[in-house]
Amino acid sequence: MSKRFEQKDWQESMRLKLDFNNMMTSYVGENGISEEEIADLQAQIEKAEKAMVEKRANGGMDWRDLPYNQADIVKDINAYVESVKDDFDTFVVLGIGGSALGPIAVQQAINHPYYNELSKEKRGGYPKLYVMDNIDPEKLVSLFDIIDLDKTLFNVITKSGSTSETMSQFMIIKEMLEEKLGKEESKKHVVCTTDAKNGNLRPIADKEGYKSFIIPAGVGGRFSELTPVGLLPAAMCGIDIEEILAGAAYMDELCKTDNTFKNPASMYAILNYLAMRRGKNISVIMPYADTLKYIGDWYAQLWAESLGKKFDNDKNVVNVGQTPVRALGATDQHSQVQLYSEGPKDKVIVFVGVDKYKTTLDIPKIYGDIPSLGFLGGETHNKLIKTEQMATEYALLKSGQTNMTITLPEVNEFTLGQILYLFEVATGFAGELLDINAFDQPGVEEGKNATYAMFGRPGYDEKKAELDNRPAKNDKFII
Ligand SMILES: O=P(O)(O)OC[C@H]1O[C@H](O)[C@H](O)[C@@H](O)[C@@H]1O
Figure 1 (cartoon, rainbow, N blue to C red):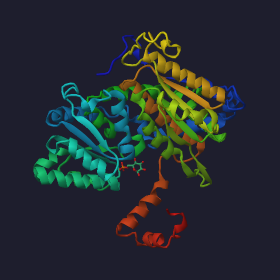
Figure 2 (cartoon, rainbow, N blue to C red; figure 1 turned 90 degrees about the vertical axis):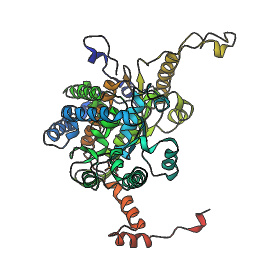
Figure 3 (cartoon, rainbow, N blue to C red; figure 1 turned 30 degrees about the vertical axis):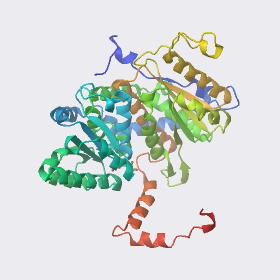
């Protein structure tokens, strides 16, 4: 299970550190953000803080209380996992968006990088985990080349129960399972995570007798990682979900301080809000740890889908939001940093560092006679990746590219719970500062409705007619 420091105040030693100095200063021009600018926002900040408290109290932010109200669900999940893990070699999540990105990110962060390639014994007796979050026919068909249906448990995750991608995956899997195993046996190979009463999947699960878990009604998909959406897949691969919730609760405590400059979520939101006001509408998240790579994908949906909005709360057209870009250190120093250092100063780079990696890798002292290699010998990759992170932070600061750093003492369930919760609260706070609704996603409906119309779903004739009459493309530009 997860490691904890021996210190009595292990929570303090496991506290994420946020370094905003590079946001507040700059070697070049006006890219730094001043304390005066934050002071000028005081009224807006107080209004946002008040709204966060009121919405939490009135059920507008049920996700805030997930670290505290799931003890029974955690027990049910852990008991279910213990009861089935010996029967299955593979656990496959069928989901998309907030029903998939969290499970991917958490598993990649905590488990062995080659977890699925390990023996079941080396996996602690837990099944392999695959998350199928797309409908590319090749990918899903290829999965059946490497899994044994008889030994596979499928977790269908969909809050709405109407997501075409997930529900069509489920229809394919259901048919395959019933053909191969028969109707009764196949029921043991499906577990559903969905709304308590709404949507298509809930009545199906109840009618078919599938084991199911509930996504609380007041928790939106991209804020649902701390519900069974994320907790079941994590527990199914041996991850300590109580530690994740404990980390989130600890971050919640830190985010309750009314000292704005010491409030991690408020400061993250405020500085990005001020950056957006300066036209910095790209948010690059750049972890210097492969374990945190997919946190970038999860963050991308959370930040983009929450803040990318056409209207403010007074129905004024504002078209706000920051485009998330996923990068990885040191890898993307060799692919994107050229743009970050010399291209438009329209970005906020969020470095995510790790104090202590789980292993230390020594570089042998050889090639001492070659100057550009000899200096590496006798050091470690741990020191090299951290040095490259600091060097890149410096180079981008010097180039005038706004950046900040979040540092995890180490990557474990507790610190992961902290950073997930930090970004969720920061997103809610940023939504208040932007005066938009951070919890809906009206912008995805047009594409969905066009899909339904073109796919021939009944009741979409008007949309079909609109599409049939849309301006034809100019053939000249089709090669
Ligand atoms: O969990 P589901 O209801 O299947 O939704 C899955 C995803 O698709 C929707 O279109 C929303 O844009 C996302 O916020 C959501 O996470």
